Image (cartoon, rainbow, N blue to C red; front, side, top):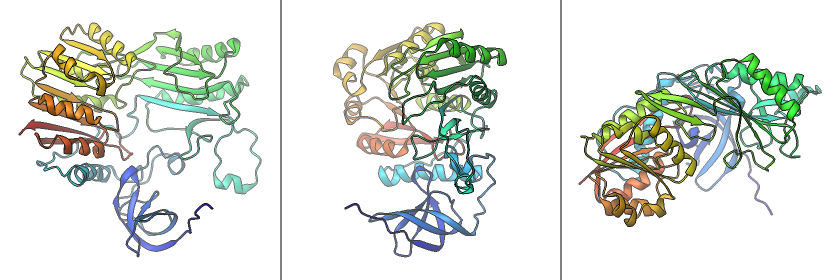
Length: 469
């Protein structure tokens, strides 16, 4: 028989901290931690729990006795329902404080690392409209608010183009204005929805696996380039061309209009053919005179301007003199590798995704950089003694792994190689702390620099310099 969670009501609990995944933290009378999804530190609230575990509860604030002085009015009309900007109701200076606190806590508490003085977190100059890539989903069964449901009103048009409701894979919140990507993002999305309805095109239903329109992806660059990609569930040439032609006419500034026909059960495009309908098959981003071609499948840091600051910190930590051999692990499309190349003797980049390495090679050629080499391979398999014997022992290693951090075999190989410096860039300071603990026997953390890439969210990047003891 399934365990039933008996809901509890805790009155006048003070929210004392911000915890993992952006949730606020309070303490229940029985000593358990309470994770709250709609409050911020400083709030005093009545909290109703919906989950109980041995050491904690999860709940939501149902009434507020006192509002925190850290609160601000959210700018977005979708804030309460979307979930994309969980901290939009917290002043930006306070967001930065809790992000830095999380980094320090993770490194000290999880990693047991002795830290130098941590440099204050680098905030983002732009706290809205900073993303260069957004993905929206079409749906014929948009999510309805409780008020809409309670009203009894029959809503005939359930079409939506927006974001998944958190926790609901089949419900889409219809978005009117998003504050994450600059114009013409909102204008394009709203036009596509209106034109699709005017043309009587069917929106996707994930439960029934039917409907013509699946997803819309928008990418922008600081150069002014704009990419639009529409994913269709099946081919219907006449209607597809009507929609795509209308987009070109309405937005002549679009430099890349592409589409995918994807009848799979999921909407990932990485194993699909991307077809260029108008313009180029890529957009171009620039950084310190370097050009980077970004195609529909490319990974590129989502906040372009702040990525530049992140890469400068990485290069400064490496403090290259001009003759070093540098390994760039998890190189992606080779952006960091090319960014540091002019200060190095040679840079070797390694990445598991073949398309990313192909893009890295093309970009290096475009930028006339001849002291970088890129190789494809699963890091834990390819990064071994044979690889080092072939390419040489690095003086400096830069590593920027995914959220799960480095595989243990990669950490052990780093210890065996024993480069003079390791610059560790991380989007998850908890897994970074775990890896630093393993490296701690031979390396001392000498610099720590948190960087905020994603204002209005709990996410934070962190750059650490390790030097041999």
